[in-house]
Length: 209
Image 1 (cartoon, rainbow, N blue to C red):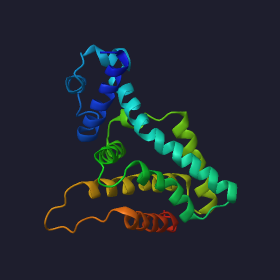
Image 2: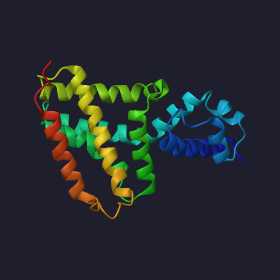
Image 3: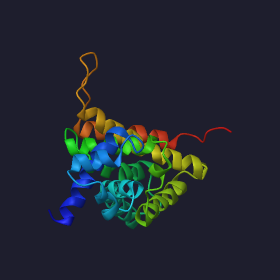
Image 4: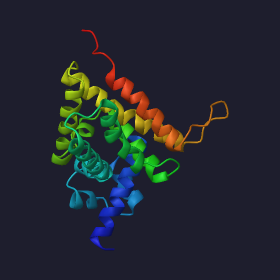
């Protein structure tokens, strides 16, 4: 088995287990057992379990980050001050594109994002690199111009909410609903609803202190 094959198998196994169990609930042995690799392979290819998590999340988030950057570039080329709804569409739209409804891989990506956002482990909050940091700061600056009354901390909280709401919607669409619950709506209707909801949430008045 070629080294690159082993690395990819470990990434695939880790993505599956981190999405289902979180960082602390996933052991290196469980990852290597699922990947069919020896225990030392994680250290050889990634250095540590924390660095493996970072590699998994960046592999998942990379296409989303790149698409968010392209969407923002297009907006700013048209106007230096896009509307809130346009910024929300540019930021959330790639999440729908990368996590299509009814797709197992998209659902796994959604679950991983939800898990990372809620995981109490410090390692789950330290995976970002320069690309993610740059895109986040660019959107923060654009939203700050559109919403000048919001404190930076509350603005960042609301942006995290865009990830959480969109990812949760993608998971719900993929999961089989219980008989007592209405079937989630997929497709363009769901996308429009999420954008409308998130635009209202982002545009809400600052929280009183």
